[in-house]
Length: 277
Ligand SMILES: [Fe+2]
Image 1: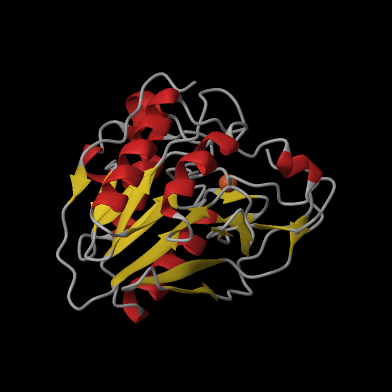
Image 2 (image 1 turned 90 degrees about the horizontal axis):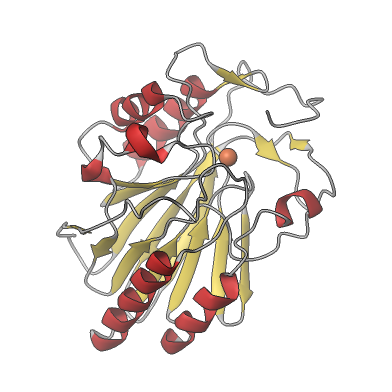
């Protein structure tokens, strides 16, 4: 289990109109250096291209950053992300397995919020990272936070968007499925109280997906850098462009979403790479 829950409190925003408009950015794998690369791809340059495109084209109320902010817990990565995001649109971050929470992320409490409350939807951020491990687990504290968020959503007749790093389902990809949240069933049991008025967005798997499992819509989103090949037994890269996810949350549990990819032919990974590290 993670040493302690670092997500707490609410991000207070007032969104115009009926819909809450979000951008999901995930798996930036920043190194703290402008020349840092992952598998041959410059991660600051790709994150900048994605974030700049998202913020300049979307009318967003908030950016959700779903983990692996750093490539290997580098302290400079969090400052890098803060700079890339700027201050015009608020953001909420949660850690992934490549992040180092203690001493690295905890100087950024303003971004480590548990909840965002909208008119028709709430958002709850859940930490699935286990210090020193690649795979994910929801601790008792995280499940308690989810139970509270579900209860509040039911009471206030809202829908609930859950954001995690590790997905809560298998991706039909053996090497990645060893890393999905081990006790996902506990979370899905809590979400049953919302019937179909809930959805989950995750990162970690560096690929787009959008399926319904047990009445819950589950989405994953491309990394801002390298992409993994879907349904691959072993580690394999994909040649798809990096991107972000646009999410519009409206009345009556309406969820409209698209992945937007951004191409940069001069900054691509080495597709023959045989491993992640
Ligand atoms: Fe990642």
